[in-house]
Image (cartoon, rainbow, N blue to C red; front, side, top):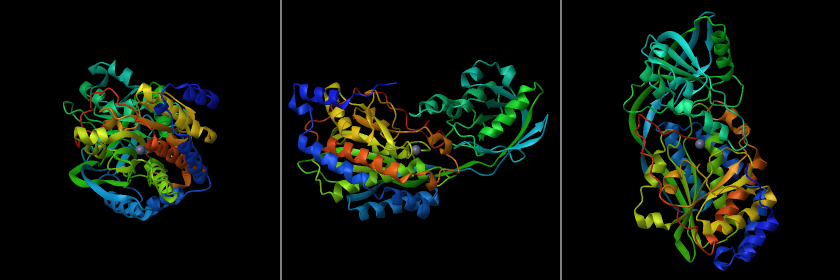
Amino acid sequence: MLRAVPLALTLLVCLAAPLESATLAPADLKTAAALRERALKGTEAWETVASLSTEVGPRLAGSEGDRAAVAWALDRMKAAGLANVRTQDVMVPQWVRGSIAVSILEPWPQHLVATALGGSVGTPEEGIEADVVQVPDIEALRALTRSEVEGKIVFINRRMERTRDGTGYGQAVVGRTQGANAAAPLGALAVVIRSIATGSERFAHTGTVTYRIDIPRIPAVALAAADADVLERQVATGKPVRLSLKLGSRDLPQVRSANVIGEIPGSDAAGEIVLLGAHLDSWDLGTGALDDGAGVAIVMEAARLVLEMKLNPRRTLRVVLYANEEFGLSGANVYANLGPEDLARHVLAMEADLGAGPVWRLDSRVADDALPMVHAIAGALEPIGVEVGKNTMEGGSDIGPLRRQGVPVLSLQHDAARYFDYHHTLNDTLDKVDRKALDQSVAAYAVAAYLAANAPADFGRLPPQPQQAPAPATAPAARR
Ligand SMILES: [Zn+2]
């Protein structure tokens, strides 16, 4: 755990910095404080999530809802007064969840609550019947021999740890994304996982399964936690457990979707861009209020408040609502396919995609020289409970392709302790979004974006890292 840097120490560091250019101007810090207080008085962010949840609802990439969301975002950005509102074409995969039926046949028959993992292939129409082999995690699966797995259904029974920063998810999710790739070469017929989740309510959590092109694709589904418990207890008796699985999932041809982009043009440094991102798509089960309706509302409202207060930032503030984050980062990869000049114009990127909990930590990945500016931004957020985090930020799936090309990033960490109770389920709905927490988040993003846009120096460049290969339609990239 990283320790918070007290405000006094932050100020001391800033005052002691040898270059004046490395600190933020007192006038900008004063304006940022006014912006922060304005947001805390109450924003329109909750109404924005309500509008998206109610008027659009689920918006799986390539679906009718996805198209409706693009139209909604264009209207909403224009209504907010953003300039240069436009779409950027993105081809996205289309996948249909289809019907599902999972039952224990022996030793004690029971139906289980389950859902397909995103991108899963279906079963033959008559379904699959096979014995279960249970493993505690993907590492244990990889240690099995072919004779232990062949002809069976693999059950990955990995529990996720509840953490404030969401790290439990990162540790557990590999079983979902890579389980099929690990099981199929051993001759497994299908993979069933315990939902990657912290809640115990009786619904299953979806999310992508990644298929490697050189490995046969097998069906992959998630069980609700309580149903994983039932399967676990039957397995624990030592009797052979036989499972039946019928899954109607299938792929359709790719279709056109779009990133939606709007800006507040900068004043004397308009050619430089501070990017605020979130993703417009959602899974099909809920209404995507938390993932990522909240993020969409936070970044749009942060920009709208800067306009409302007529702050005229030096650099251009660009809001990007990405297409198809959930199912392959399609929009992020298209957006980041920039020439060197356009890339160089991106001074900093931020992204909101960890639900609607209050922001509690500011992580970053910037050049070391720029750290005093990050600490000064954190100082402006200290009154709303934000502490300084690490400068080795890895997360941020939609801004990842920019970061790997050297664009510095800030990451405002939301309290994610409850987020994975609802994440990727039918229960991701508006009632989980707390108005006050959302306003606090808007305050944090607005202040950070405004100060970054007015910073006297840029945030340096990061050493380029290898890009992840863009995911083909049939093999969505692992994601948050
Ligand atoms: Zn998301």
